[in-house]
Length: 490
Image: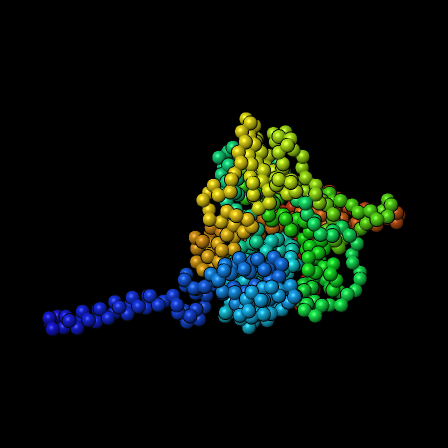
């Protein structure tokens, strides 16, 4: 090569280096539709849509929005009065009542979706989003039914999307402390666990409302009922009291089970239970005649689940759930004046092992350790140096949005504390308790017409892999419900 060509080549190389650097420098601000479907540069803002944006949906959408760190591009709610506060806070977000219309019109403009509706619509909305390649954050319980939880878990893998359930205590570093205490063998293998709550804190165990009311102008009642059996509008259903009715909600277990069973499930490495048995509180309006209200959740219940030994906890575990204000009694190892679980003992978790006891409150807060040798340890929030150490969210939403931008199977995704790989089996276990409660209340008339038999009041044996009760087929109707009209999970 002649020397006279060298300056030209140098200039050319210099040009290429500069243009390449410029291209790299500007790469992250190229519009996503130019970069290609599904591509999101790490410096981009996530485009988020919310479905169910009043009530708990207000905090879910805004915690994910994170003071403008991400974009909130669409807000969808069947009740625009409930959603008003969110609409006013985000005036540029497009407003919808029907999530299907939102997905059709804005599919290319949405990266991720939060779902904070009534329990009975979680699965259908989340599935529709995942099928479009959208990452999803779904409020607890993940689903209304066991079958739905299994389907969402499998769909998250199939569609390669980043998922998180809204049991924010899963991201509480205090739960990390509980797991470390257990892994060190401080309480030994656990054979017994108790979980309890003061829920329901809404009317439950009451007769079915029959009054008729006009539908408020701001509500699309057809969409609110959605996949459930049809009922006329009644303030007894919406906006809050739906939790106590099987048509829409999942009772005390659905409300608090994913928060309170989580520490036991996570710490002990539990999987599918193998059997369950339960009892429920009765309601008497007439003397000697218990009310029969199969449409509604009971005023209180106790559910016992059994789990096999595993690699983490080498002992079979009997876990007992108590609700309606019922709770377990003090183990001898805990001083009489020490509260169980939370300071007022209203909610809590007890893990009873060979060498001691661990206890905590909702979201895994205030964990304590009582050992047989008299040692007592108490975790103080912040010991792990985690920047998210205060209630109520522990960075649960932000870790999800970060993982969405990093992508499926990224280290950020794998670090999530309640992706559907974990949240799905946890939800199945929680909803299994409701299967037991509803089976307990099944009745058939006696042959002589005098009274009723209750064939479901026995120990139920569960085949987790096949989602089937093996010794009482009538119970399997509660594994998967039928949807109304054209609604489907597909």
